[in-house]
Image 1 (cartoon, rainbow, N blue to C red):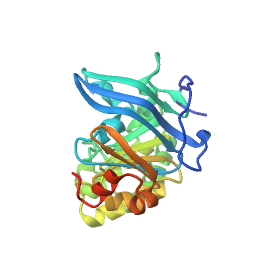
Image 2: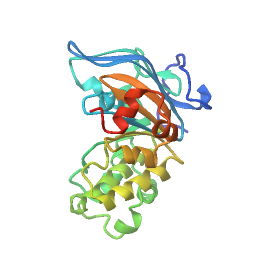
Image 3: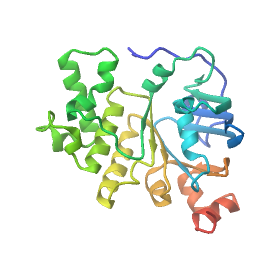
Image 4: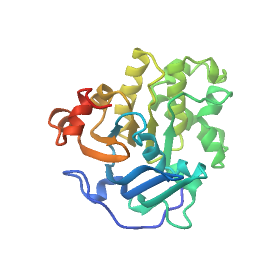
Length: 272
């Protein structure tokens, strides 16, 4: 039984090649985002398939993180943000009147660029969201903590240290802990905003392997400046430039047979 109330229903956009609309987790239709008078996203229509990793690439300032934050309404925190068009989760418009933002963010989790564990124990970090949902039975919390830490490839490193302060973990471990915290409440979608940009190569590889394993249970949307990372882990890739969606395709095709010259110029380093 879901802990999250349903959202209201609305239409659909075209799916990626070979993906039916019913297999979409998220979609935007004619999405425009302004901060004051500045247009940040311009007419973005983007379908995102369930159980896949979709990477958002493009130069700094192209709108990648703004688009990502539209999927869980984090842009609501900016007073001067104006949004038009539709963003749908499982076909339901998350910006429709009366939608519950807290319920939405239970369904769409987020991991930020820099790890942000709470100054609490490892255990308390993982079960934090569950306690907010009113779950207090120790057995349920214990089971959920172990399940999330195993899924985040961290259990064997911390199972004997669960009462230690999470800030004692390495940077890479902290990022995996934050991922465990995000997935403990079992969201449908996990948003990752440059989750490896502050990590060393070994920790980066661990997180990339983790992302690939997590798509068996969640839909992932990844913002990355690292095109090699997008090529390694994602199933679909969307290239944004100056607030516009230039090209969106299966990752292998986008990197080997681009349909747009601007995409090729960016991938080859001639467009910044």
